Image (cartoon, rainbow, N blue to C red; front, side):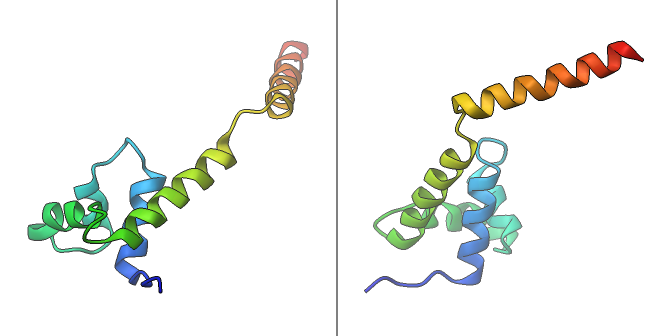
Length: 94
């Protein structure tokens, strides 16, 4: 049976994953509503698979989902090049 995440844990995961590399786990804990004085300890505990395997599992799932959504594919790349080319042409014509 999988334990459900609390609202604060969900907020932590969202902050941690969506701001990956831009903020620390401690900052993610603060933004999630964990107390300023315990944010570092709480962040460390939430990232510990022995203490909170459900949080770590959800972080990994969210990271995979983000990678899939932002993956560079040939079609996305060509579409973006086309868009930039059109904008450059429009600007040049003015």
